[in-house]
Length: 433
Picture 1: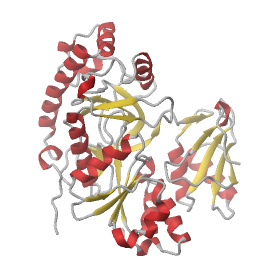
Picture 2 (picture 1 turned 30 degrees about the vertical axis):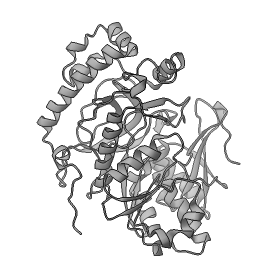
Picture 3 (picture 1 turned 90 degrees about the horizontal axis):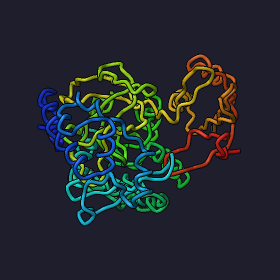
Picture 4 (picture 1 turned 180 degrees about the horizontal axis):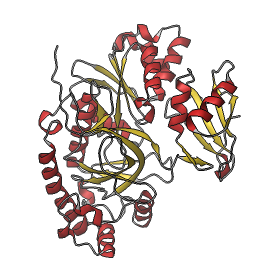
């Protein structure tokens, strides 16, 4: 059956001028709501000398200070569970999720029924762009315990009309046993999981390419935008890979690749406003092809736990502002997280850049080990499955990424969840042996 190109054509193809007008209207309402109902935001705006009625456009937003995760954590520690940045009456909150907590104490995120509806609608646009359709049977292999990627993305997948199988994690062997009963056509997971599941299939005597998956829809890790990584996963499964992006603090999924497979479309003009800033100075960066900066998000339609000018720490590069597919949301690639970036004698390095280089050489598992701070060369890179060639890889790292490393073959942990790529030994993290 031939399905429509868009899940929500009116919003996804909205002319930029219309989108700006809609954004400005929703922004004014959201700022007024935050100022009137959340002491946290009232304090921030008052301290900055900003009256809510003066914030009427996206340009006006720069008058507001940024919001950081540390500030939100402090608010929730002082007034659990939601903190004093919540804008909804507790009786109207129908669900709580947690952030992953990978960089500190997790945040508690509340949802009203309206918030859940918005989350599902925005997420459906993204996974539809990445390939989900009503005639798919999709294995949902994200963690269901506490985190947004479980139930929130479950809702988004169901919103597309697809048949959704809530497999979760920890059931890989059982999943393979039931494969011929379920007959899935698509898999939704982190990028790490298809690699893990392929190994499990091989150990069970089955070729992943024979299992009939047509689509892999991934989220949660930046590698989906890397040509070498995409080629590796697609070759393993004989399926197409579509990438999506979101973050628990804003919306679980809010961007997705279209069939052009060249960057993630921002697909939430009615739910979030995006800014790009220079990470070190906080100065705005124009959203135009080739520009790079940290993504900053402001909710436009969030009642329970809204954020205004929230620093995501995700660094992105703008691919284009137009697309042959007709979607009007700008396209971007996530380069990495600013808090994962490390500096070696003035050279800024993202673990994702190391990953791309290693994937080109057939390496699926690696870890960067930082023994001391400031970081001094040679940086140790652990790899698995590299049959010789350590010196060649080290030379390639020096030539492309500009720092000296020592490559060592090691046995690295298997995981169904996001792979850990960076170990800061100087901060007390224990690296693999």
